[in-house]
Length: 378
Image (cartoon, rainbow, N blue to C red):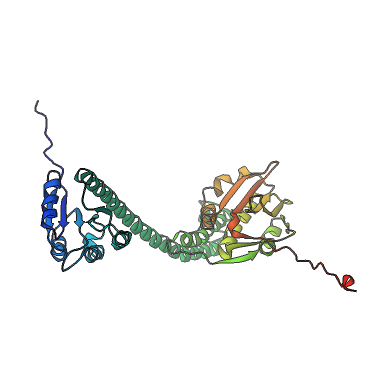
């Protein structure tokens, strides 16, 4: 049996060495020629023309060259798409700090001063080549991710836009069928009128969550932040959901803080998140149940805004944890550098909490007292 031989050989890296010193050019070819394909240029202009026309893996550039010096050559390379990420080693007799700083600012990858320690320089060349290759791969991956993110944004926007109108039309159609043709039982082979209406309501809820979720995941989305008083947020949350709570015979109890701090949030995104967890709590709560809204500062300066219900958490877990609503809350808190925490209450029910770091909390300033009272002046 004859074994197959892999004739594919690893390509030798091509290096362009630009230096106006002929001895240095010969040394580059002699010392690096065993492991690399070294091409030399006597000034920056010739080097630029060669780099523009041919493919090289690395450039070794002297700073003091006629016609086009090393700084100018590096700048040209970093402004050209073909060579924008090509590794560059500066090899020069200038060892002053300003020259080194200027070379790296122009775009150099590494720096070596003359006279060169050739034994060590070979290892430096290999390292810069390897590191440059890794950076090029990383840039390509980032470009792919950026393109995928752009495609994702367009898809989410299209989904949200195209789902909204059909859901409204379908809702209206089912409503008409149920209320105008309820006598025709053949229309309800796949469910009762109540079940159909419930399905349409679920579809509308999904669409309502898709739209804000698409916005939050868009790479162009930015929070519109402002400082908000916590007690005001508690009052608004209680009032906004009071009608739905009353229809389910559930009481919402908003507990005001003694010294209400301010929190730095996007109020619209915050209210969307609260609506999700409040509606979840209302679905779980039995008639006569209570939902408490509690806000508290933690010892480390962070802040927790929580909702506590006394419902049966197993009754809705399978429906809510897999839905888009909690995805929206998690994403919203991530954008606020916070966390969404949900866990069973110690006795019964569930605690849903929005946690914010101390950097987003502004405590009320302590009251200033005058130590010179009117009676003391007499």
